[in-house]
Length: 193
Image (tube, rainbow, N blue to C red; front, side, top):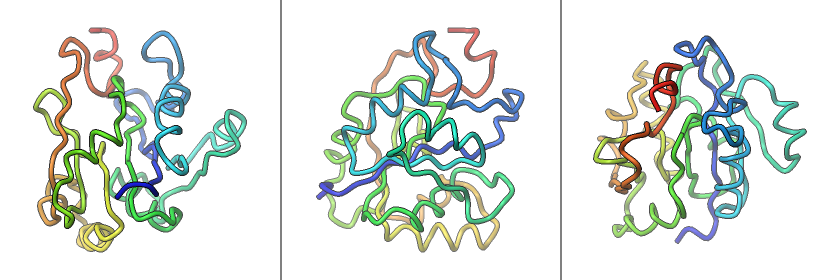
């Protein structure tokens, strides 16, 4: 079912709670930049890796020329949903694995675990639940969901929770270290680790 799948790292936000830094270029775990960590994890699992971003494209290309890069179709840092909708204009695959750029703990075999949960052939999106908390931007989505994404954006709705309720969805459950956040959204979260 998922022989042909791309991955998109969602890095098109403002990072306003972190002073506007580019989270992909940060070294949150003290070992490697987010860009390196996510590329290392995702590239072997998918056909092509993309980055949805509005800046630092030359840095991404210098790191790996095979990475595709695109910006949102509408300007203005409009959130993950806009990045997802824009991705369908670039990827030629029927499935995309979306991953937020600030994912601190990257589960092993991410695509495999999502695929295991999708027992219904009509499933349009499978989102992650990490330690029983939904992380909607971390999801596997079928191209058919792009119609609902476009409708929600047109209606000025930006909630992935609300959007996914309108889709045939399921959840993939991951148990990760509860002492660490699943994503880094502020410097104080990082300091607390």
